[in-house]
Amino acid sequence: MDVVLHEVEPSRAERAAVDALLGPPGSGWVGGVRDPQRDPRAAVGGHAAREQRHLLLPALLAVQSRVGWVSEGALNYICARLTVPPAEAWGVATFYALISTAPRPPRVLHVCDDIACRNRGARAVIDALGRRVGPAHHAGHDSDHVVLKEGDCAWLRSPCLGLCDQAPAALLTAAGAEPVHRLFGAVSADRAQAVLRGDDWQSDVPRLALPQEGDPSLRLLKRVGQVDPTSLEAYRATGGYEALRRAIALGPEGVLRELTDSKLVGRGGAAFPMGRKWESVARQPRRPHFVICNADESEPGTFKDRVLLEGDPFVIVEAMTIAGFAVGAERGYVYIRGEYPLAISRMQHAVEQARLRGFLGENIAGCGLSFDIEIRSGGGAYICGEETAIFNSIEGLRGEPRNKPPFPVQAGVFKHPTVINNVETLANIPDIVLDGGLAFAEIGTGESTGTKLFCLSGAVRRPGVYEVPFGVTLGNLLAMAGGPPKGRSIQAILLGGAAGLFVRPDELDLPLTFEGARAARVTLGSGVVMVFDESADMVDVLLRIAAFFRDESCGQCVPCRVGTVRQEEALYRLASGRPRGTVEDELALLAEIGRAMKDASICGLGQTAYSAVESAIERFGLFADGGKR
Image 1 (cartoon, one colour):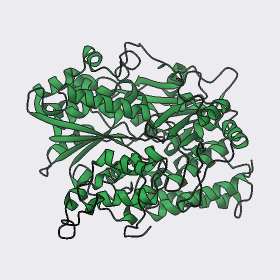
Image 2: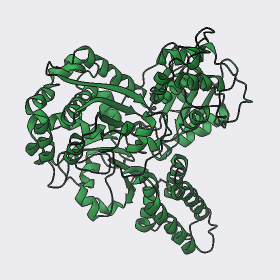
Image 3: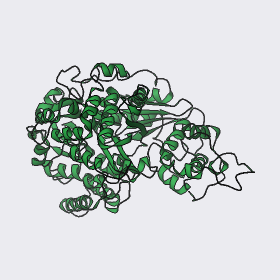
Image 4: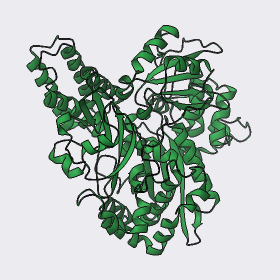
């Protein structure tokens, strides 16, 4: 891709998709019809266009949804509208897995091939699709020789789709004037083929009921499955927006005090104290401040945020509004992974309803508070779950992490002070404000307060999201899920997802607290508890984890970009029984690669890419028998 625009024109559909998002172009300088009297003498609209650089990813996704791929003509038009150099736009477009810059059929089925689905039948579905439909679609960035025919469809292998409790999963994307995006669980080969043909995509797929649905002890999940998630009235009838009124009565300082007293820490894995984070942003003199909900939940095995976004979206809107009030922000963003179409639509509806009823916008509740929220969809990049990568993605840049410092509380999105929390963390805010921080701190343990959501999947009888107070043991949690299927026994448990660690079945007395996890040298991470029975091929699981990190590395830093590739290569040599030197030599090389990634990578992806591999080798003695499967 060149640094200047080419003379390739967009199609009518591509132009319409971009204009629907950006509005009609104001002059020939920004993609409109050239005015021979005005445009040769004056450039009109350039500054306003440059101010819209942050709409680059939404514009690319709009074309992808309308046509099925982003052509050179479409990219040229987007670049003209936003005054972005084509080379930069190309770098952004090719960064995201859900955006294709090569011809792709309008109808595509993304079939999950990650660890949870692989152990619940995904490989059989993929093998059947390969025989019946043909190999998985693959077109590189320069594959402009592909000719599409009417009615063409394709399927792709996909990383985790966040539907692990209903594995195997698939995502349908059908481009058009009325695009279709649907997430399917319990997908068989026959169902996948029917959906791909367009015969069966409209029928509803029953979602599994929340295992604890109706339990009066629930706090975060109390409305899920019980209250209409599309009704603001239903939300208010169950106590919705009482916390915002209480927050306004307390004032910003009072809200910050309650949050500090609660000892709430982030639920995304880093466990940073929320009171300190919010107060740091509130004290920053530079304005404006921003609030971001990190809903780019892409860790394999994690699906708790999807359940909250789909089942109780208004609580996130209210929590973000309280955050905006407390830290002095007037704008917020909810960044949701693109593979969650229902969550995106539910949150968009919740924002619109709240705005319509005066709970977002100017002078909220008549107290002078101004705050609004914008929904942003991701493009299929695991790395965008990293907080600074989200900032770059929202700003219209490649979703690569930034070096820290400066930290987000000082220079976040658009280089302004930013509070960024994940969905589960924010869902705790209304209860803390209503009941008081000290009451919240009494739940759980001294260092791990409140309740925690855990995502149970794999070899358990009742997979799903579970809410328990901190302090229950891993064995207690597995018992709630019914334990392994009848006649099966547990071989291994993965805590924290691909970036987490394995534990043995004799470690079920592990207390599920941050301090307990540290003492056992494991991590709770994002709440993943994935169970593998004796039929699981643990070497295959490790190979898939290694492939995941190799694929998802943004490539910005050498330790991660090279290390994830070398790690996968070493694992394949061990798995095939052909180590370089002895098995001990290969394991020593793996450990050295892992240390280099952990010590020198810019962000958590590279720093944790070896964690699961290391724990499997240390705790299970994997490859100790010579390595060959």
